[in-house]
Structure formats: structure tokens, C-alpha cells
Amino acid sequence: MKVYKKAVYIVMFSAILALSLNCREEVPIGEMSEAKLAITRAQSVKAEKYAPDEMKAATEKLVASHAFIRDEETGDAAGAAVASKEKAVEAYNKAVPLLAKDSIAAAENDMQNATNVYAEVLAKSSYSEAKNSLQEANQLFENKQYYSAHVKAEDAGRKARAAREASLGRKSILRDSIEDVNVTIAKAKQYNAEQHAPGKLRLAEENAQLAGNSLNSLKLKEGFAAVEIAKVNADDAYIMSLKGTSRVTIDEARTLVAQAEGSPGAKVAATDLAMAKESLKSSESLLLESKYRESISAAEDSKRLAQTVIAASSSASVSAAGAGSSVTEGEAGYRTYTVKYRPANRDTLWGIAKKFYNNGFQWKKIYNANQSIINNPNLIRPGWKLKVPVEEKAKKAETKDEAAQ
Image 1 (cartoon, rainbow, N blue to C red):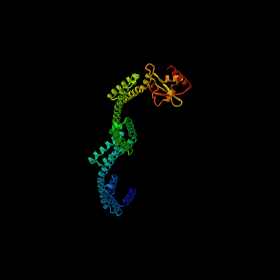
Image 2: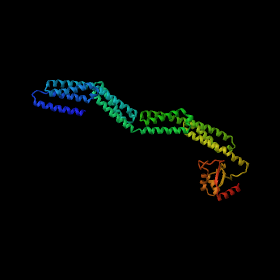
Image 3: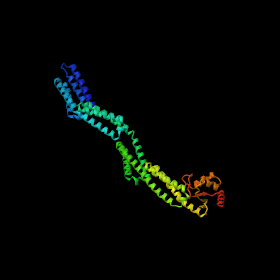
Image 4: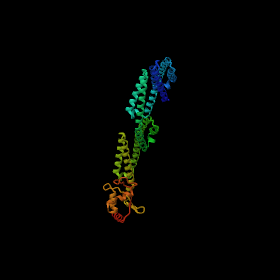
């Protein structure tokens, strides 16, 4: 439509120029040109949208001015051109503040979109530039410099959109943060967070889920706020769970140590009992120092040692009776060997393998057959019943061992 109007104006001006060359009467070229420039200026601020009546009147009067020239009524043509310019100026003055207001509103919307994706942090430079441009636009508007305010607002909008895109390009930071929180939540659950820190665990899980939803909907600011809450609560849940588990494990160790002290194995496995007590004492000290994982480990060691003392009771009973063999018939293909307590010469897998196979390097056969109870091949406990794979050499060694006893 605008192209069509321009074509009409060009044809009209051409006609006017031709008439001016052929007529002696003066054509109001200056007035008509000023009217056309005023209309173009009004169009630059979207006067057709914001001041439609004034723009319509300005255009109609300029067309009327052309018509008067065709009719050789140059006086009326000049008057119509002047009136056209006045209406165009009126349209501009009415439209420009409305345009500036809408441009600022659009820029503010772009800023909000950038804020929603946490651009003030993830795209700090671009976001700051956009914010400054928007502030300048508002200041220009207050000073009634409407067109400048419009231009500055459009600049702010472009920068805000760029900041948003830059921020979205870094959304993996939020994704990684959510994954880290979920790892902490899982670790807290390993230490019975449901029992020791149910409230903290619930807040951590809820906010981690909220952060994930915000990431999916690109509301990164909400996501980062939620993941921060999730992180704090997950960390608290983890620490509280460690502390609670440490206390529970220490209580269990105390109970077992007390049982070990009252068992027959207390005399047979005095060294292990002493070590169990020492580990228990260490776990209690570590708890007071807030070294919860170390405290749990020490308490577990105390429990294992106490259980060894209790298990040594059966070995002590056999020794006191002065009878019985450490080797008995087991399931097909195996002999069962009961680990003995010898303070001066403890049983080892190497020693047992040498006894049965006449070759200590065969200890792995025994270890592989008993991995369900042996965690550390360098540490076996009195009273344990080990399966020993049968070989001809082993039978001979067994017979020799029985004779020696």
C-alpha cells in the first residue's frame, strides 16, 4: 500500500512539474514538499496506528492539493498543502509518545524474559547493557524526548534478547547442579536419611524436582533458586544422616563389645577384644570431632573385632576339651577348616594352603572358595569355618596334621 501511495505521489509531482513549466501561475511546490515530508515523518512513528484520523486527514488534504493544481487553482492547492502538513505534524506529535511507551513496554518484556532465564548471572555483560539502555529510555521519556526514547528502548530490547539467548546457551550449568544435588540425596539415603533427616530429605527432593521442571520450561532463574534450596537441604540431610548412622553404629559396637567381654572368647582372643575396645573409643572421639564417616568406619571395625571374639568362643571350648580336629568333612569336593586362635602363630591363608597343598602360593584357591566371608585375604578370624578345595596332597597333609595333633 505504501509503495502504491509513493507511486501516486511521484506521478502527481511529475504532473505538477509539467504544469509549472507550461503555466505562468506559481505552483506551491514548497508547501507540497513540506507536507509530504511531514507525512513521511509521521509514518516513521507509526502514526497510521497511533493517530489514524490525523494521518487520514493529512493524506486527503495532500491529494486535494494535487487535484487543485490539475484544476489550475493554485491558491487552493497551497492552502490544502499547508493544512496537510499541519495534520501530519499533529499525527506525529500524537503518535510518538505512544510509540515510545509501547517500545519501552516491549523492552521491559524482553528484560523479564531474560531475567527468567537468569541472564543477570549467566549473561551478565549483555544483561547489564540492556538494563542500562532501558533506564536511559525511561529517562528520555520522562524528559519528553519521545523519539529518542523509542530508539533507545528498541536498543534495550535487542540487547535483552541477546542476553536471553546467551543465558539459554549455558543452561547446562543448572542441569549439572541438579545432578550434583541428586547424587548428594542418594548418598544421604545410603545412610538412612529417611530416618535421620526426613524433613531435610523431603525439601531436597521437592526442590530438586522443581529445579528439573524449571529447566525443562526454561525458567532458569526459578530453577537456580530451587536447586540452591535443594543443595542446602541435601547437604544437611547427608550430614545429619552420617551423624545419626555414626551414633547407631557406635551403639551397636558397644553392645557387641559388652557381649564379647562376657564371652569365653574374651580370654582366647584377648588381643582382638582390646582392639575392639580401642576402635570403639576411637569412633566415639571421631564422632565428637564431627568426622562422621571415619567414626562409622571405626565403629564397624569394633563390631567386626567383637564378633571375632564371640566366634572364638567355640574354638576355646574345643581347645579346653583337648580333643577334636580343626579339619572336618564338608560338602562334596571340600574339607572344612576351622580357623584357630594362636597368639604366637596366627592362622593365615598362606599357612593353611601350605598345610593342605604343601604350597603357600595356593592360598588363592581357599580365598576364592570363601569370598562370601573373607573381605580381606590378609585378615581371617578365629572360629571361621573355611571351605578348602580337596586335592590328593591336601588329604595327605590333613592326615599328617591329624597325626601331629
